[in-house]
Image (cartoon, rainbow, N blue to C red):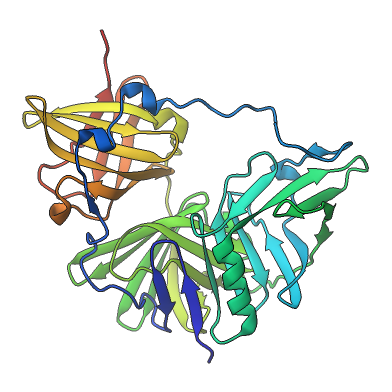
Length: 389
């Protein structure tokens, strides 16, 4: 069987037939966290959490007689034309900001992008690519991915959808027909609210699916390991992109097939038996939880800042001096708040990422955060709205 090659922004990983294996750094999961040099490096004033939203009026140039396309205008599967000596396709799936570019059965790119002004972007900052190792197409697509790019969409006066790649000329979209099987799940939304507990021999892993997001959990040498990120099913393939992780086995892009019994088959052909269960979750609006939250715990004054840009920081002060300071990225999956640390005041005691369920959320008062962080000082589990004079 040909070897599958994968590459990402944070790490390179080559995936074997093992369920959770990856080649790469085997050091501590906290090794990618940098030292926070001081409060001024990441913690900003409270007003920074409320960022101005972009105008709803498009300011991009479009051909005369056309309008900027909306997400609803996009087709599920589209032909982008010929590249690398073969046909290349774009898939939009369930339209939860996850997209993929395919040379079927050979090479593919998975990426997460906001659909803004009729445009999606891809590259090392927001995506991953994979392909059959040794194939020329895989090599060419890898170069295409590394360079990055954009795809813009408009609708012309004849109500036809058109696209332009990397600022080129607009051309009519050709809808691609992709065969589906009754024996496989082809819609990513069918996984929302489900938890799959899967086995491969003695190895066990669970996947919990929110709307367009997933949580993966398994037992490692030092206890529970987990990863979270974006997912969708496109061209009948389940794409899972890890963006938050506290695990040694970092696999940036996993590609699998989900059969009608919800069992999984990896891109390498290995099958995994899974049991399915449903769960309920509260969908918390990311815009409403974004802001500045405070807590008073063990004599420390804590401030948690969740910015609408996706950046976050948490700081603990005592008598005006910083006792703890972390910054990085955040997202919320239904009611699951995930934090990825980019820098810490004490990196040797700082985990790569933290997850926890948000409950009793009230944008006017606060929320409870039952999280996995075991660092000292411990991040509080109850947060309230910042009060001002």
